[in-house]
Length: 80
Image 1 (cartoon, one colour):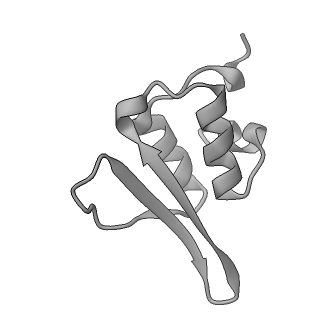
Image 2: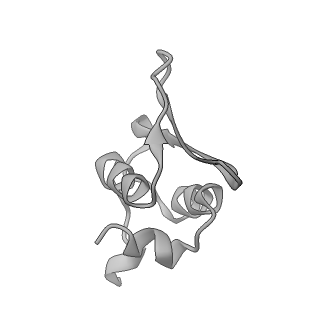
Image 3: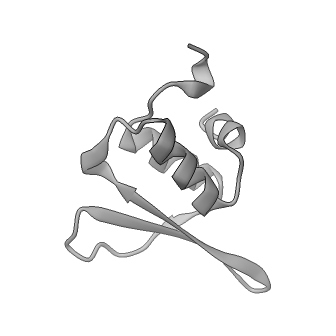
C-alpha cells in the first residue's frame, strides 16, 4: 500500500485541512466538525469531519477531498 492511499486519522485530516487554508467553525455540540474556507471572491468550501468514523477509508477520504476542492493525491500531499 502506498503512503498516500492509507487510512487517515481525524488528527491527520485536521492537519491537512489547516495546511489547505481551512479553519474550524465553532463546535455546535454534534460529532461533526465543519471546516471552512473561502470568501472575498474565492468560492466557499466546507468540509465535514466526523471523528467517530476514524480511521477514514478511501470513500470518506475521497468525499472530504471533493468537499475541499482538491484531488485525493493533493489531499494526502498536504499532510507533508
